[in-house]
Amino acid sequence: MKNQSPRIELMGCKIDNLSMEETLQTIEGFIASGEPHQHVVVNVDKLVKAQKDPALRQIINDCALINVDGMPVVWASRLLGKPLKERVAGVDLFESLMRRSAEKGWRVYLLGAKEDIVSRVRDIYANKYPGLVFAGYRNGYWKPDEEGAIVQQIAEAKADLLFVAISSPKKEQFLGAYQATMKIPFAMGVGGTFDVAAGKVKRAPVWMQKVGLEWFYRFLQEPRRMFRRYFIEDMAFFGLLLKEWRKQSS
Image (cartoon, rainbow, N blue to C red; front, side):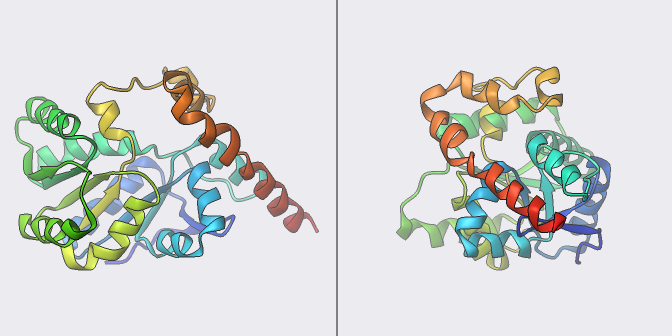
């Protein structure tokens, strides 16, 4: 099943212009089809990486469903005359899908983060949604020669949804390479969502989320780790935005 939603193109990346509810309905259709589909969320960091890495950009554009997680990207879409309906945050989508999985009997596989984190996420959601069925879970640390066996284990688990919490672009590359083998109806990279779900990382207050300062709250929690990403690497986004705006204005 292919996603029939309207798509826009922003800085070389395709994006589905969907609300959260429309996104959930699309995913439900994917799962009903039984065919493999890959999902990705695009934020400032990923747009910048995709500009430098054509292979990553192709993986993103080939995904069955592409959402925006990041208010700066939503604002950029408006500035460029391609307004997106709303931000569909990965952590919010994960929560909604875990709840619907319990309601509909979908089987869930969790892959990524450290062993204590992923096992804690599994325990938290097993208690939160008693009807939730876990096809399996595994931490996100493995050697290259172990990858084939991990892919086979996931394929044999027959999950309906696979959530992958490893860093970008590794998670996009992993799913791009193995989705056809694993045959998961819906596979989603969730970045640091497991850390939030396990309570290791606090999410920004709602008001900060609404004004686009969630990234700054994240930086305050881990300044050493996040400084380079937010204040050096991601600054290239503004240059890309200006270039795109000039192109459209000429």
